[in-house]
Image 1 (cartoon, rainbow, N blue to C red):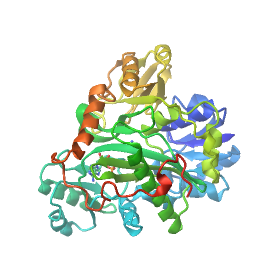
Image 2: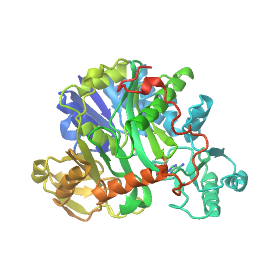
Image 3: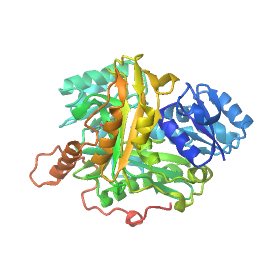
Image 4: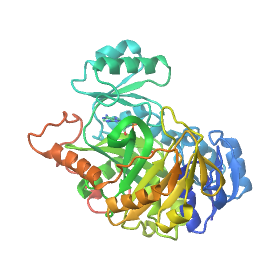
Length: 470
Ligand code: AMP
Ligand code: GLY
């Protein structure tokens, strides 16, 4: 099949590489060259995909069977709608469907309208005059979020990014003064995060292995929020701190959200990504994304068995998935990004980094390229976004981490990577954190008010099936 991959990051490299392994003919459209994608592609279009016209024209000339849209910006700009209008099936929702990601207010209001009990307490604000009074309604810590897209970097959480309510209020006012679509204040929920991605199409919703993403820039979760510095997944496709029953409750939130969108006249074909916090009251939804996560896609796609990924994605784009194509190996994975020091707020881009590629390959570690330039294989100049990712697999998370660390030893030059990702100590700490939330009398932050009590029945549809028909 002839498949167009839209986007220029490591996530899109992983999508293209997985399609290439399935013997698809890959075409690429994105704003910049990608040293991983370009050698795989039969043809490339260097263009800003938030301007649909040239991408649609390229897809027509190349007689594309279907397109996969990686990043959120082209989805928000209506590239999915433009391709569908030209009769090209798409893995990726319409602009209207992408609002589940592009407007956090739309997302929260949709959940409230359909009584999907997964949100923390929140208020939406448009006016700086309201800020102080609404902040005073929060009796515990809270988060301040721009309503519109911010690549995960505009969110400030009390205790991490600011200390006093007054500082949070000042940040909310600053965001409101800067224009944009408004601000959300949300109760801070305590727990550990997990990402549940699923293919969504007319025939149902097909969950992918769970992933834990490390959002903060520096070891021990300090520093700024980033797009994600690395991630792990567990052999059984759950996580050490997310049991099957909790995964099923999260999947039920996805299923009901897809149904809510449909009832509001917004059919959805693509990847839906729920970012959840595993709390004492069950999974609480932090955000939805209308696409594969990055780095989460790197973990999950590395597990896809050789073969039929192109047919699987074609099914998503055209409405009917063959569930026997959901073949993800039962292995643990760890991904780590290599970035320019100072990422994300002040990346010192431009230094050369060398990678002993044959040795990395011999380690059995995948490399997926993002924002790097290269004139010679093995020599890369890091840009100001995430450079490249190393992904290892094994039976245990910390064994996969050791493989990635061994490969990081083969990367020389001026760069930064987090070394705590997926270590036994770090994974144990997260697991103990969640366990501690459940211990009676243990100190935990106030429970999110609107979340169903522990033990509240998940819908029976979610109990044991991997594939949920809607
Ligand atoms: P978002 O862009 O909404 O995913 O927010 C970015 C990051 O901020 C999340 O991945 C969480 O780490 C953190 N965050 C967002 N909302 C909350 C919340 N209500 N409580 C605790 N942490 C949050
Ligand atoms: N890793 C978080 C995201 O893709 O938004």
